[in-house]
Image (cartoon, rainbow, N blue to C red; front, top):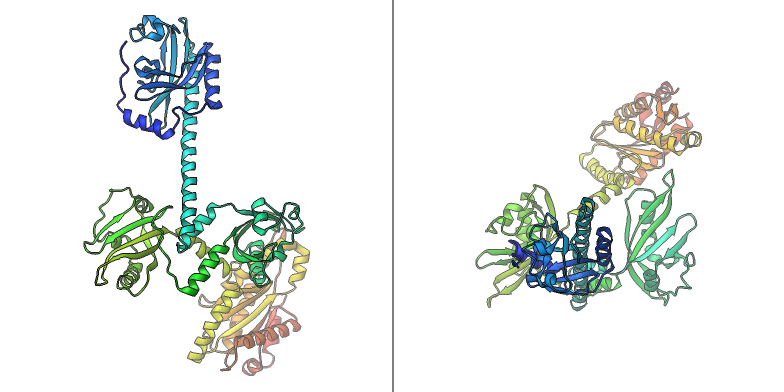
Length: 633
């Protein structure tokens, strides 16, 4: 009998079998089902799911045969895998020179018919077969051939699933290793500690906003020390569990998300354990269900117990202990620089972080400098030099680094001298690089959302208050007045009542667009609260210039507003105040503008009033009423 030939890719094929750890494994129903289906479809007494290694063919699943393995020299399947893209069909083994003298043919079980479809991996390695066997010569139809090939593909899919399962198990083992390492090394970096905590179970909670009904999972319950009976859905007051000193700030963040101003809520605060102690938790939550008009109906969140982390941070703050670098585990780019030779080495994760494979480009002197953003390089070099010179316990910085595809990645760089000479000179430094681009993007998004009104897109009150302080300082230095205008939408409550919130929102958005268009690009329009808006105009020549600007706003609002279902005419009342009193603060200036706005309302709306008597003395005592009346409809 001709001996089956070893394949050209025999070593990768054997390695694939070893990695799958399927040889001599316990029986599995999925493979047994494939063998049973093959026997039923082809009408044969015997069917196998087999794999072929260096010396043996061994059977993962069998129907009608008790033999567990066969020497490769006598293996029919070893011939079948020689051509990975075709079925091997032997209608009568006694007539085939390859098998006529095989002991399995000449003696029990006296095999005659054999048909096999190779089990081929995605990488093209034929590892075994799904085969059917009979003790009498026979043929199979095209449909049976196709079915056998499909069953072989299904077996290959099971192997692929097995490989992914092994990868998941490896990841789980790695997570457990990192957890153990974190317990042994209390000075790990915050990023590695956070990775370990994320690997643990999460306390999950579900809040029905309307009823306040709070439902928690087992992990959340045990984290807080309650029994199953004590933590029935709705039985715990979640607000009362939050530390009073943390509640106000947490509620602000939480409500901001409920109002749609932020994409999620993330906050670290204390919660009361059943035994009376306070534990620190990282709280993350998101509204997963809203009504048609955007009202939050249901919020789902998680809690991670970070008490140990907070205590460690406090201990480090008090004792001044230094953080140790995380030199292994996770998707961390590691680099090692010999300061004597200038030679640097990088791990595979470091190359992959920037889109390269190991060896694709030379790790020559100057590589890092060529990849770092020019605006960040000097600061990074200075920080490293200070650490190398012993001025800092470690180096930590953030830089932009160019990816192979041209993108700039934000990278957190941490490094520590690990070897010094007898004279204290640094000899070797080791560092880690973490890709924090996603975190940076979230920070920028959250910062923008914190300063922008979600409905109108104008700067919000916080942004306005930050800028007006700088503007007041510039006004005092230059002795040039600035102007504050306080304005709101006339009869806005009536608009909301008549046209609903959708109509009211449409008016506010269009109102914001027009007042922004009505001021200079150097001026600022902001939404202060509700239907109240403020304008900040710097370098205003005087009351006449302020009056012209106010009239321009009124004229910009004159055309009718289009709203869902119709159109309406919208007007505003404006209070105008100019700075000019050296010791006047911003609240006082706003109060004068607000008082002027009130006077404009009393005067019939759709007009403006200037704070104080200066305006009348410049333009005449009847100028304001006349100007206002000409703009009323």
